[in-house]
Length: 400
Image (cartoon, rainbow, N blue to C red; front, side, top):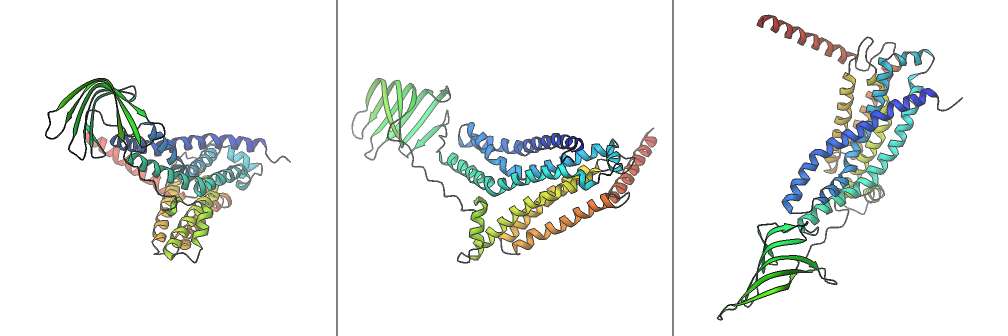
């Protein structure tokens, strides 16, 4: 007997396309709001636009931790909903295929995604979170080459004021340059030039050259007559401010990979508060991964509507359940990190309750004749819809 039958391939196709679509839509929606905030932040700091996309790339693992289970669940839900509404599921059940047998392919897909999410939350997400904060730091400190704002005075090293009228060719050509330099002896140089450009100085990364073309230098020395010098080309060295080094990875427990969390969380020689934070982070990541093993059961339980009904209430309930459970885990991690509750209880307690609920819902659908996972909710929503429709019709009669 073949391990993968034509029915398995059919279920795989029905599950895969909605799952990929949900991945793309969820990631896009989660990133869209963040993109607008990052554009505002980078523009305010005067940084290059390209850094926005680097920061967004480092946010992808964060969003993937929620998008992956959502995509899996909705992929399974859409697949079995199509089978149920087209009566194909009844035919499969009639020939002896149980719900558990039909979940073979979704569970294989779930195992692949569990491994992917394990690598994501265990290794990729901590590193990307650190690199994201590093980009933020470098942008604020100027290490990413934050641009000198056009039309404004920029102070460098408290001894030089620089103003540029126009910037062309991505900052390679500067038009209308004015610079004013002062030293400790009171000597002041006022320099104006028609145009110029910045050049790197080989071997001295802390100094750049501002090459000026067609301008004048006014030298003012206390007690002497100012002198004026015209030039065709003049190289003005500029000392860049010292850039503070970004902190080492691991200042926050969210930046540790799983082996590091294990090493810190159960090391009795470390302070208790550090160990508790590491234990909370470790349990949070584990429970987020293990929960995905229950997602196919939840997707199937909520996919099958009542007979002679096309209600899509199950889709809404499924998204709410997964999202709320994700937020409960985040809250449990935060509370456990403060030492107010044991990390194991804070994170695995909700998991046990959530698991029991999902198993009960699946049992109702798979083993109780005519059973519905959310039958009471379907009945209540239908009654509510009928009352609203009756109220609208009554209002329409009164107005006519």
